Image (tube, rainbow, N blue to C red; front, side, top):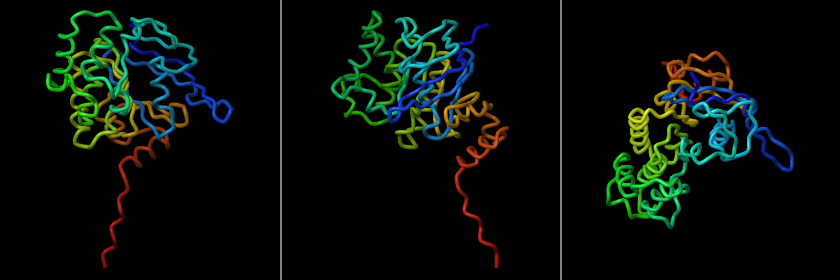
Length: 257
């Protein structure tokens, strides 16, 4: 049975000061249908770059990149782009400031030539906990959590099979983060979504994902289960140190007199 996402020897190269820089260097992984796969690591480790390559947003090289059994390149057909949708880190930056929520949701429906715009928009808003009051508002009239709900609705309005989440809660208040994570969890189960969740927050990944790849300097150090991530039971020293660092610093207790 084919994997929903299969990546072999993925490489992404940028230019820095006129010289090539390998941001992702030989990454391979496979994700089953309905699985949520995490990618964690320090800033600059290549997490979001992998996501953008899988989405076809940047040039890449790979021995294989398959989505739902189809080999894809950077240039995708309309059907291939509909299969996979992306939720960005900054909900304010990803929504056009001069477009209402209605127009933001109507646009992908029109691009893909789907009918029933009004019904789809109302249903999409309801799915993310918004109602008709929010439909004709602009992004600046919404809270950060509401903006991210609109971004999620826009991603799901085409009924994709794959959802790419690029640190979707890191720009939100802690209380709102929990609401958005609970919403995403409910939606992925209801829709049997295959999900890649990128984050630097290991606790979020351990809660949300079945497995996680730990990144360092463009490479996958190892892939662990969520339970091992929670237990700190990693094989590689770097992974163990990253898990320990994510748990924060505890001031040593002063010795009793």
